[in-house]
Structures are given as structure tokens and as C-alpha cells.
Length: 286
Ligand SMILES: [Zn+2]
Image 1 (tube, helix red, strand yellow):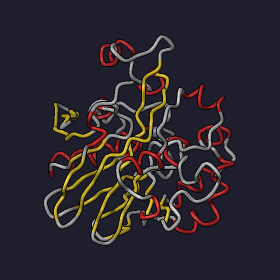
Image 2: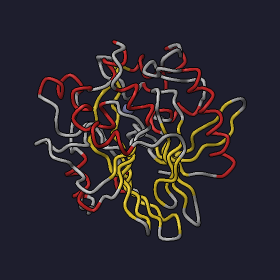
Image 3: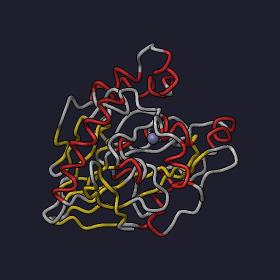
């Protein structure tokens, strides 16, 4: 998959708040699953140049490093380095993982004060631990929603298949204790907003500077076509919630001109959202 220069995207949000896109590698997902209830006739042409012979799409593992006067926040950790060759091949996972990607971008993982996770699926929470099982971000608080931890460790077979529960159990004793319950400003200017939808306790991360707002809406907004609130993936455990929450968040994002960073878009990961008939349209900035 060709990643463009957006890998180096950075923005000043004002008031000492800065954001940098860090791409922690890529993997591949079944296209039909990503488009969920949408008939192939409607999505085929959108991905004609990127769908592979197995019917899969390349998915970037987009993360953000947010610098604020109060501390550094990493949003998402990608798949990480604790996957064996079988899983790596099955997912078509290619690095660099978050730790080398951060270092290449000039950030010391030891300087991260807080890790905010939109949810705990393997492709977002996989990098909490380093390859040897040590803490990848030794001084960071790890913030997911209380509800997300509850869903992630549930014994429902569908949920067991969605999460790497063995890995999550290793970090739950300490990370679970730091979980957010609802909408919380985790550092001045950086808030988590509980959305649910894609997963039981999914959250968005909203960053406010003096000159602009940036939103990472996690897997509720993974690719440009997610701008239609009705287009939800088959991975969404609560699709009706996804539709409702997307419509509400997108209305605000359009009205206030938020910069949006998409969770899995490889080519145009940063953009804005504009109203378009009864839905919204994603307009790439890079
Ligand atoms: Zn994902």
C-alpha cells in the first residue's frame, strides 16, 4: 500500500497545542465487512483501484501524537509488536509498529503522559505493551472507557472474537483502573467523548486549541465514505447507535469546522466534513 506524505502531517492548533499523525503500519480487511449493510453496487467504484484479489482493502493504522502545555497524548497504539507470524500473515500486517514509528517521527515513547484509545480492538490497543511484554509507554495513563473494558472482557463469543482478550487481561489490572466513565477532559484541551456504536464503549478524542479543533472519531470514521452516518461496518456491535452518534458528531464537526483525522485511511487521512443532502461529505485536506 502506498502511503503518501501525509505520514508527516502536523498541525498547530494554537495555544501550544500541536498534533502529528503517526502511522503505525497497515493491515488488510475484507471490503464487504467494512461496508457492512451497503450493497456492493454502491461501494464497488469507490475502491476499484485498491481492492486486492482476495477482496480486501489496505487499512492504515493512524495514530496521533498530541502535544499540549500540560503533557503529551498518544491516540491509539495500532497492532503493536506482539503478534506471531501466522497472525501477521493472516492480517497482512506490515510495520513499522507504533514504537519505531514514534521514534522515527522524533518522539520518545517514554515522554508520553497519556494514551487515549478509541476502543480496545486488536488494531488499536495492540501496542500498549512492547514486544517483550514491558510497558511501551512507561509513564503514561491509558484511557479507554469503563464500558469498553467491560465489553472487551465479556464472554459473549462475538466479543471474544473481536478482542485479543489474553493480551487485554495482562494490562487490565492497571489500565482498567484508569478508565474514563463518560465524557472526560483527560488533560486541558484534550477530551474523550463516549460514543459506543462501533464497540460497546467506543470513544472519540477531541482536541481543542485556541485556533482550531481536531477530532479523532475512531472507527466510527475510518475512511472517507464513513461520512454517511448510515454507512456503518459489519464490525459495529451497535449499528443503530453508530448511525445516531455519527449524525450528531458530524453535525457539530461541520458547523465548527473541525479538522478530522480518519482512523484507517491510507491516502487522505486528514480532512473536514461538510453537509451533503441528508448526509455528509468528507473533504480531504491532505
Ligand atoms: Zn480499527
